[in-house]
Length: 183
Image (cartoon, rainbow, N blue to C red; front, side, top):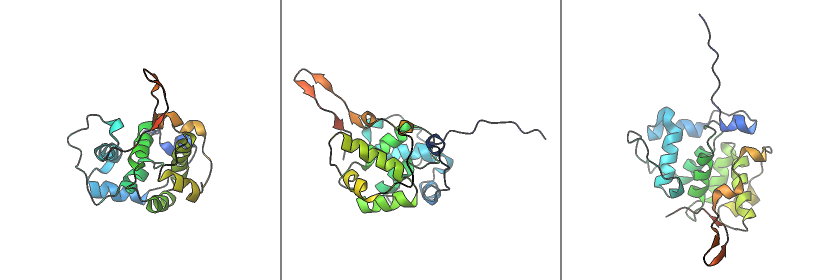
C-alpha cells in the first residue's frame, strides 16, 4: 500500500497558529441542519438569508433550508470555528449577522468561550471599536470576553473589511459605516 501525501486543508485554526478542537456545536449543527460535511456552505447561506446580505451569492439549491431551532448566535459562532475553512468572508458574514440588537450578548459570550472563538469575536469587537462604534453585542463582548491567547492580527480580516467605506462623495467625505445586519 502506498500513502500519498496530501496537502492538509487550510483551516482558520491553522492560519491562526492554533489547533482546531472538535466542536460539539459543529457536530450538532451538521446533524440538525442536514448539511453534513457541507456545513460551512450551509452556514454562509443561512447567515445571508438571516440578514448578512452583503455576502449574497448564488447557493447550491440542494443545500438544506434554514432550521429555526438554530439560533443566530450559534450560526455566528459556528462561522468562526477553527475547523472552518480559512475563508475571510465566513468571519465577515458572522460579524454582519451578529451586528443586531436581536443577538443576546450573554449567550454569544458563553458560546464563544465554549467553542474557543473568543480571539475571533474580540477581533471583530476591536474593529467595531476602531470605527468609534459602541454597537452591541460588540461593546459587551469587549468587556466580558477574555482571550485564551493572542492571535496574529494579520491572520484575520482588517477592520475595513467589516465596514462600507464610501469616502469622498458628491456631498463631501462620508465616514465608514459598520456593516449591520439587514433585518
